[in-house]
Length: 247
Length: 247
Image (cartoon, rainbow over all chains, first blue to last red; front, side, top):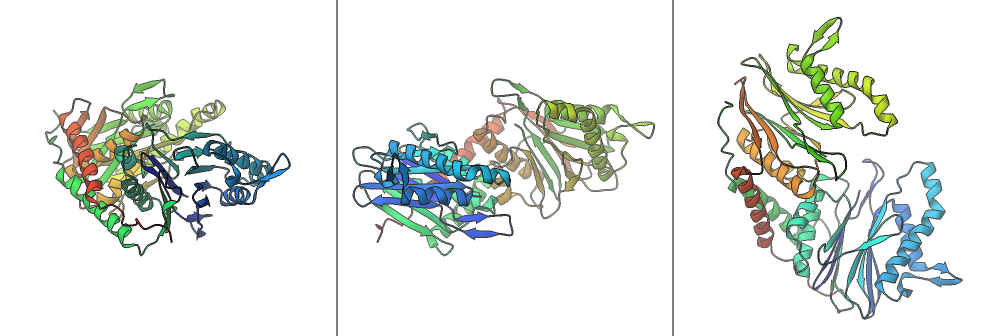
């Protein structure tokens, strides 16, 4: 499993991904799923991936090393804007699918693949996309400023209740970490360490690019505080007054 | 969709079910999914159902009206103890599957069916089972005192954190209602009204058998308080201290 979340807020962009991969419960590994593409001061992008690891690694390699487009080798960093870059990722997903898809289907391997793609290029605000296996995609907006891929359900309630377009970027990171913590507690397929990037609008370089591991004191404290607050929250709610017997 | 939860705690049993059914988002109805079977002062049982409604209603009807067992018509209330009753439900699920399964498969209908079965019969403490489509089942224990069926993920974190075998029955009902509230916020396929029963150990009649609808002031208050507490909980956690630029 995997859990990745991306937030597009007024001040910028937050992306967070776990690193656990598994081929069955007895075969667990750590792989980076948050991939950074940047030209300092000019293009700042990141892709978070979920799904078949061989497939997503092939896509990331093609995006870095280039694919043939009309006789010319193009990389993700060659794309002129975020929309065109999202289309390019979709095209590469389709290309990899053409190469590997039929053989993967023959052995019954999962072909669920999805990606979050966020970043900023000159002349446009930060943008965030969710790209599907078919290579099509949707874009985050003021109404729906976050996307999740992978194991999204456990961590969705806190995002639904708390994330707004007006949320500050580091408050957004905090909420993403709470959402990740809830997911890790309920699904062993999602695990530490975490990778995160934060982009402040128009800064054109990462404000934060960090790995958070089990020894991270802030994340440990956040997890403890959230648990304690939830316990206190339900203790503060009175018991149901329904104690009458059935008539 | 459906969400049902059952808790087996030291003092007794709690079962809670929503009532929303749908055949697509444009075809939503209300059906009772929590079904009560009782002989006053002697046998107290309830079944919560998830999955294909025609299938689960057929099972409930067979359990009430009886099925032929070696030439004799037997009902759920004829069973001598909870374990035998759980086996009997499993047998009836298999019987209905033999009748309807192949035709349902032909039209591609979902055959996901699961049930929570709880209650008490003389001479044994309350017991709670989760019964699968194949008619096999597992039983709740001190280690894992709750079961969920249907859309279980949104409402699982609060149960994981808060429900223990030592939890009081009405605190258990409160936690089940919080879990239900989280689920309803994130999945439109789960909705009011709710049906709930509470059984106090050895009382041999329901301590509570109630429908909770949108006008219920306690549930409304619980939902508001839980939202406010979650908002406050994340506000009380400091922002990440990670504000250094990337080296």
